[in-house]
Image (cartoon, rainbow, N blue to C red; front, side):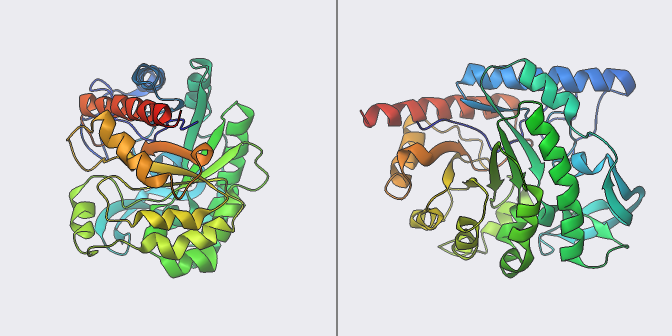
Length: 339
């Protein structure tokens, strides 16, 4: 009960990639980079275990970015034809590749790091993939020229990858959909349908992560415009509650999200963000326990999973893992409270 987990990404070691950057450059090349990615994956798993995390992740150590890491092994994408576009409704600019032909999965994308993570932990293992709507929002398109159609093309490729991950022994496949907090009408029109296509036929646990973004300036500036109460979840949670996705991961700690909104997810496991990834202040275990207690009136204890608000890739390593240690300790306090 109250098993802890993380949203997905963790900082990369300083010998592997640039530190404290969302889009870091690799510091290794060729065969050394391939080996380094696996070493970093195993290290991330072991550091999560040391912190006391119950459901561990590969930490997204083998990917520069959670979206482009998946795109790298797909046909139909030209990485040499890069364009600068506004993403998340022009919240910030990013240089992205271009869709120039039919999207097809060329072969396994994440087999190496998923296999390494599975071989080096006996704990439950989560693996994250970008959700189809978020991919569509993070790429230029000169082929499909229709966002729902493009989303379903990506969903088909994601589904193939997800089935392979499950066959490798991954316990939870999570799709990351920060775009669900931006395009609320589209979520109901085609976003959830594309998400369900990505998860179609999976027998492992499925999850979707929806947050207010990494702790970068563009996101914190955007949050400052959202007013006293952030109610974006109110529009998307009912649609997700009706979906076939098993778990919903969301932001709570230091957010202005009315906590009662998580009651809209009746029947789902809820991954409650108890760790603020936009602050370097390390939560105390009691801070974490307080967030859990606030959520318990709206989510049964056996469906509540203490989690981080979002990925931690741009954070300093020592701060990120100190926060994970607090997350585990706070969940233990909350468990004892219940006995």
